[in-house]
Length: 57
Image (tube, rainbow, N blue to C red; front, top):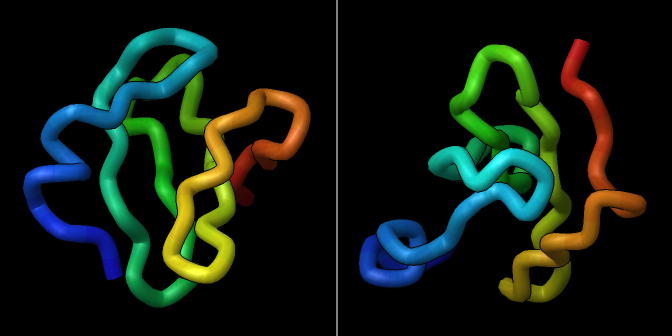
């Protein structure tokens, strides 16, 4: 789980949209409809690399 203060400052590296934490999938998901990339969170650390992101189903 990421603190709210951290979520407020994180942005998607691909499109600069806001990120929301998906608790079930344990990843950060871009809220921009055209982007929608999902970034993994490993050991509580967001991996904000576009080449590590996936497109949600």
